[in-house]
Each structure stands twice: as C-alpha cells, then as structure tokens.
Image (cartoon, rainbow, N blue to C red; front, side, top):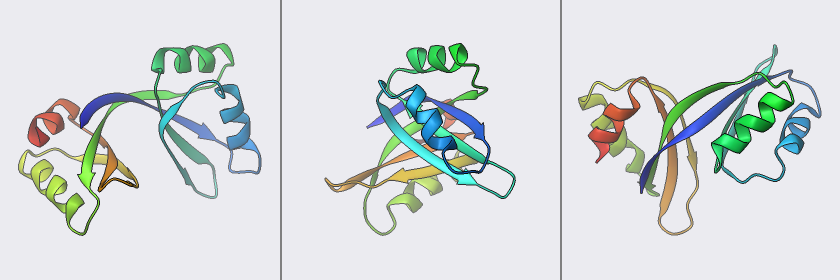
Length: 127
C-alpha cells in the first residue's frame, strides 16, 4: 500500500496537558498516524488524519496554528532491512527525506510515513 496523505504539524508548548488539549479538540476524528517531537523550548505534533478537511476546519475554528504538507504513507516489510530498501530507492531517485516515522505492523508489514522534498518523486521511486 502506498498513498499520499496530508500531515498537519502543530507547535505546542512543552508542558503537561498541551497534547491532551489538542487531541480533545479533534476527538471525533480518526488519526492514521501521530508522532510528537519535543525539545526544551516546545514540541511539534505531526498528525495524519483520516479526514483532513474536517481536521483542518476544527483547527481553524479553534485558532490552532498549523502547517500542512503532503506525506507518503507506504507499507514496509516489518523485518531487518525493510526500511533500508525504501531508503535506497529514495536515494537513487535523489529524494531528500525531511521526516520519517514508522507505525509497527502486526501482519508482517509496518506503515512508514515519509515527509520528503519531492513526494511525487518518492511515490514514483517506490512504485
């Protein structure tokens, strides 16, 4: 499986309860992927909702600042070397990876979310 999806990047203060407040606003929407990266100064939440239009509407209505970008969600073999095969294909296509996270699999495959400088090029390289 390979699909281009919308990822929302939301910047939050790095303090207790901020992530819960954000997720409470969108509690009626399903998330396909989520990752948080924190530093001393703040945190960035990356969310890939099933319904990006509704998700964006809720964020705008509540005044939540965000960036939105296309990402590629792709199946990767959940075994040693599975990710290396994908990375080699992207390197050969001169696609730069700007972000990557993996959602563990239970059926032999995991899902990999790839934020790249050229999502269409990544999609073509991995087809």
